[in-house]
Image (cartoon, rainbow over all chains, first blue to last red; front, top):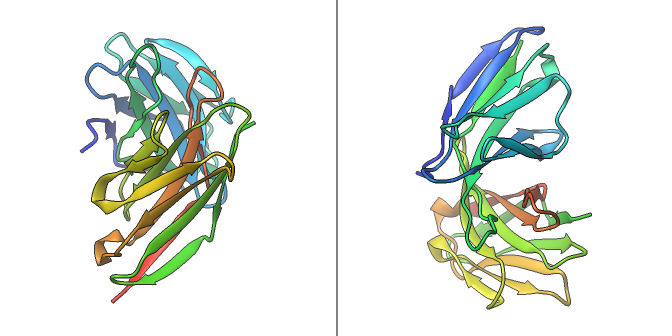
Length: 115
Length: 114
């Protein structure tokens, strides 16, 4: 158990819909990362938040957005869903050591299926 | 830009045999290197990491990896494979920017034959 929790575990929805994925980081970790794992794209970085602020963006679609709340949990919002958005979405968190945070611990993931 | 290449999408070994999973990276700055393992229908578990210091790093479950700067490699090894090692293994690099986001290789599925 990494200490990172994600809900829900599975999500099945239809094209055009909107869903929210939730992540709670390890206790004390300020950084939250979101990754997408799909068969054709592999594991790709989407976005990072640090202590409530967006720090880095990767290959995240404009239809997707995220935020990190004062209690440090994070939500990934996916809207206008398409079949190609079906994937496993992971959240990871990291702490800091000497001002550097580089070791990420992953949650169990949310499997999204868009029908 | 940083990138990771994992040679061999599938590696098959016999139980008790040496496991060698290859990873080469490209980075313009000193990299941080990681190996993660993913068991079926589970998340990613950190096996080991290299940040600074000793180039031979030991991880969980008997795995180890050696950072070789001259070869830009970080291959994962285990002297004797066990059936429970069957999983997908991902090599990742970070450190290019202050986000420390992970750039992953495409993964290697390890099959262990009885």
